[in-house]
Image (tube, rainbow, N blue to C red; front, side, top):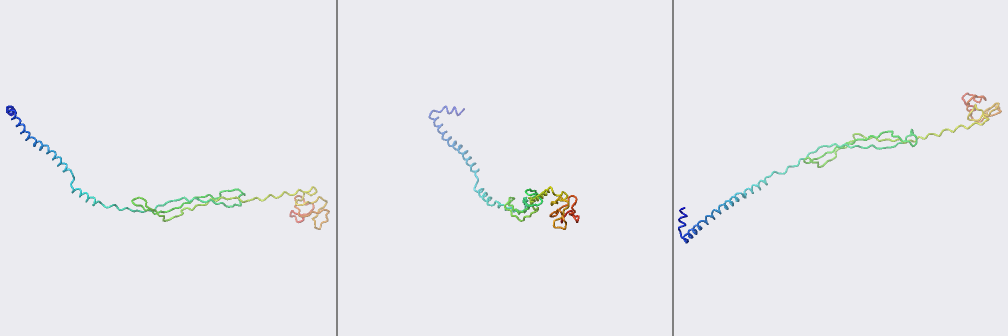
Length: 217
């Protein structure tokens, strides 16, 4: 309050000088106050920037990193089984009728076993080599028989005897007569028969002298 009363008592010129003097003093102070926060900010930013020393540490850390791991190689024997199909063959068979076929031996597949040596790098297969091969079960061929049998033709029926041939004889005509002898023999007929005759009834002409069932033999 005293400052206001004193200031109001001054004349216009005196008041101007007082205000001017105060301004000269206030402006540097204000600039100083404004510069302090800026300097603080710059200092804080500078303090947050990494120095060259950490960069050097990072480079050294990179140079000191561990060497790459050495690949791990392992091997094992692997067995693989393969089915071997059977073959089919045909054979002639005289016990089967011509043109007929029949499977006389059933085919059976076989088994083949292969052993491979497999190499792994870090658990991943890199190569395999066959080391053995064994036929553990041999296949059996299937056999089909083809018939070749041809039945012989039936014998021709006997020639019918002439009406004047005696029914007691066959295979040759023995004439019906009072007496029949073998042609070329010692009999005196009156009738004769040529060739061997088979007795199928009664030997009424006594042509089968030895009783074997055939006359004139």
